[in-house]
Length: 111
Image 1 (cartoon, one colour):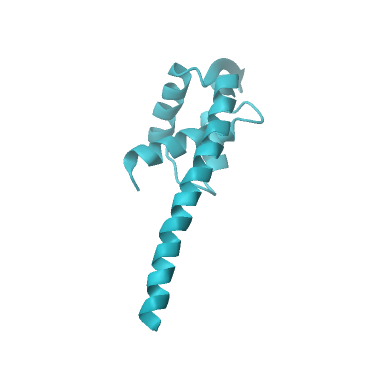
Image 2 (tube, one colour):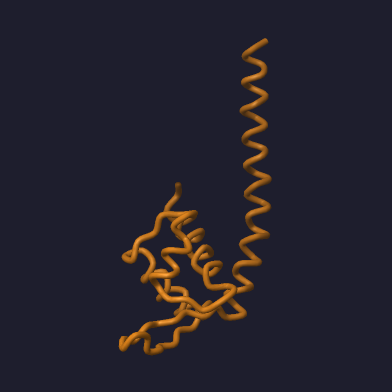
């Protein structure tokens, strides 16, 4: 997969993981693991990039005597998810075109 496309997909996945409630790094990884493999070394640069883009905010809170960073999606982050959904419709349309072309070729080869 194209690295830029994968990067954009991971950004949106991270935003989606915190869309309904604030979360922290380890929990985000656990939430994403059933859908996409992501490590700490991948996640934390994404979180910093999303914070710099003002798509999420960070707050620190004590948990069991340690400080933990909690991530909160901003209205711009929610908009990015909605924009992604619209973009994905176009990607699916292109995918359907490519598949159709391949299916037609396969059908013609069988004749």
